[in-house]
Amino acid sequence: MTATDLEQRLRAIGAARYHDKHPFHTLLHGGGCSPDQVRAWVINRYYYQSRIPMKDAAFLSRCDDPALRRRWRSRIEDHDGTDTSEGGLERWLRLADAVGLDRAYVASTRGVLPATRFAVDAYVRYVRDMPFLQAVAASLTELFAPAIHANRIAGLFEHYDFADQRSMSYFQHRLTEAPKDVAFGLAWVLANADTPEKADMACDALVFKTDVLWAQLDALSAAYVDPGRIPPGAWQPGEGLA
Image (spheres, rainbow, N blue to C red):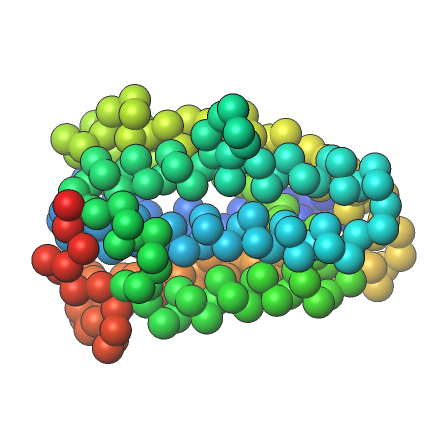
């Protein structure tokens, strides 16, 4: 297997399994979500966003290659920000403001669905515990992220009053951040998955990550769309409003 062959396998996984195909995203981007369904999405997606820098910190904590650490640590700054620039978490909380949520409630993660929490925590453990090849390969869902962000920006601007340049800034920044990250990650995986067994490991890692993303939307849809069965402890419409 050549690097080109492996890249084609990885892209085929995204084409078949990435969560842009989930019915909830079709509903959201097409303007079919109620205000409370949008709020539920914002609350639950924040949990995933908030754990990304923790996942990357766990990765760095066991990385003994300074060059790899230098390239990877910008991912943490992209989400957490720096002393002189805001990060993705602050931009996501601006979206929470725009849809009428109390940002302190969102940041507390108290209303997150159990299945969201389980799926995201499993991803953090995966990156913390698995060999580096799988840990890096799991991040390659970013190959497919710019397209969903572009569709989301267009759909939200068209259909929802809360959408403006300020509330959409998270997605607009990811249009440039994600390609930068994935260019390095993809090159690293293609260089290091140099046997058929390692190629399979990389592909399995990407499948795992698509499952993590899909599971979150399944839980969101079941709780707030159909059948609308909200589990105990999860956010109830009317709670956590600004």
